[in-house]
Every structure is written in structure tokens, then in C-alpha cells.
Image (cartoon, rainbow, N blue to C red; front, side, top):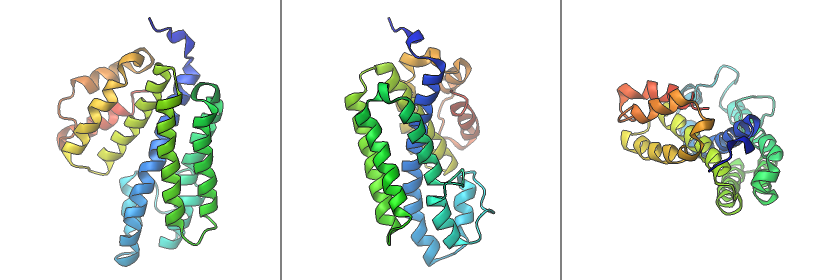
Length: 225
């Protein structure tokens, strides 16, 4: 039987948010890199829609060039890729003894590469390398994090963030429906550490990807922990 007292409330919170922040950086980098060429070629104001879909402010940017630089690299912007990756690193540092130094190192390498990206000729190439290190982080989680409950909490954070982003970005129903069972499969062993009502709601809500269910699904997934 699992001894949940071995996982403190603070640890559970940090594991969950480490998973969310890593996924947020990885997924939004992919979205940014797919969107930036369109913004440059078609409409300089498309970054406003980008921000609106992610539910972050757009009026803090003076234009596309300012957005491109500050959204990626600005440590003073709480919604920037840099700020989110820094939060992931801060959680990983505290959790080093549980996730292993090897796993932590991949977050450090990603952050180092992002810092280099602010000075590089091609931000795109640097952000691609950041994404590569974050993929390596998840591979190390699977290989190095022996405690299955802590690993599950990381994955609950990961798939909660992915589901949140897919709903906000209006992904097709079938894509959203593929994430839900992955999320719920990782909640089984750690249910006692999650919000019971939110978890029951996710299990009970059929076809989360349908338009009529998306608002409720978003509320539930963001109440899970």
C-alpha cells in the first residue's frame, strides 16, 4: 500500500507544477515557432490573437518585434517562455533528490540554451534545442524517477497543461479526447493528493472535446490540484 504521507503537500504541488511548466514551455514554443512566420508574412498584429488564445495580455507589447523578443526571453514578463522555464527550474532544484540530478540537468540545459537564444542570430534554432532538452527531460523522468507516485504527479501536471492548452487553442475534438485518458490514467495512484470533486467531474464529463463541454472541462482540469 502506498504511503502518501511520504509525499508532502509542498512536494505534491511542486511535482505537479514542474510537470505543467515544462509542458507549457514545450507546447507554447512549438506554437510560437509555427505562428511567427505567418505573423511576419501576413499580419504584424497576429500576435494579439496569439496572446488572446493563451489568455495572456497583449497590450504590454509595442509591436511584433517587441513581442517576439520579450515573449521568448524577458525575465520580467511573467508570461514569457523564460519566466515559465525559470519556474520549472526552481521547482526542479527543490525536487532534485526525488527526480535525480540527471533529470534536473535537462531543465538546466534548456534554460541555458534559452539564455543563449536571446543573443543568437537565430532564435528559432535555439528554441528548437530548448524543446529537444525538454523532451530529454521527460525521457529521464521515465528512466530515472523510481517512485511511481511522484512520476505520476509529474505526468498529471504535464497532461493537465496539455489539455488546458488544447482547449484554449480550439484543437479538434478527437485530439482533445486522446489526452483525457492519458491524464486520468496517471491520477489513479495519486487520487488522494488531487481535488476529489474535480477528478470526479472529469470522469463524469463525457466527450470533453465537444464545444459544449470545453468550458467545464477547462474549469475542472485547472481545479485538479
